[in-house]
Image 1: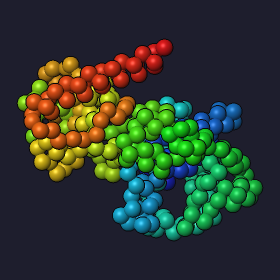
Image 2 (image 1 turned 90 degrees about the vertical axis):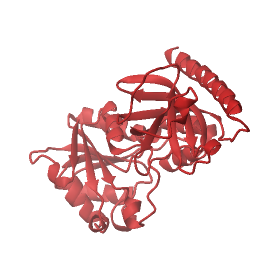
Image 3 (image 1 turned 60 degrees about the vertical axis):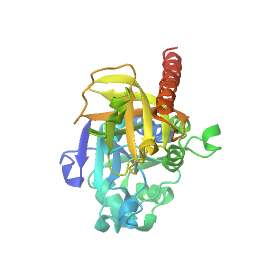
Image 4 (image 1 turned 30 degrees about the vertical axis):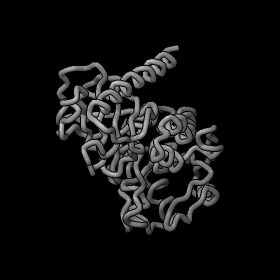
Length: 320
């Protein structure tokens, strides 16, 4: 899959393509439906499928300080899009100047002059251009002028976790923030993931017999609510069952929120300085302060056993 940053990266000889545009944070099941449709249409026409997205998130430029928590960094989104069959991802630097581009200019400069769109696939609520003035209806009108079709794909509606709302990144962020990682996974179609480099912490987990990887998360990462979770630690090409702690470590009067993952029953791991990923499967319990260290250690042992049970059950279900 090709990855371009900015319009100038698009090959000069690029031909017709099927295009879909959006932030696509998380590449959740609603996004997947739209992207798959674009890929299928591209295959029918015998031309490439292109996803156009933005960096930074448009809200950070339009309303500085309002950057939403991110469900997936751009490299992860690109990986997920590649798995769906996308041929190229175009990341457009979203600047103040770019935010003032009218819908008409966006169509000409991006879709017509550079990507030579044959079809554009979007969700029903897609908006674009200065002050989000462009709609799918306007896009369809422009398509008649510039010879491209516009196809609208309805989003899924969630089940119990979302209360019947359409799948959305906003809803997913809310569920993650509430610690409902199972509900978030229902929308994403996979566990919510947090990534970063392993840094040295206070090393209290090692002293207590549960050495953890202290993950310095990427900026603006959507981090689940404080508590203990079952999940997996991805490191050095391995996927390891893990007990994950999120919070400030109140037992030792901590103040900084951290994400720490204990690779269950693994000894001698040295992950310092490595980029790792942590997948959240299920919430186990909230953050708590115990009367004694012995009480804490007893609870940690229970947490690990509970995490084993949850992970084993999930893996058994996946393989069934």
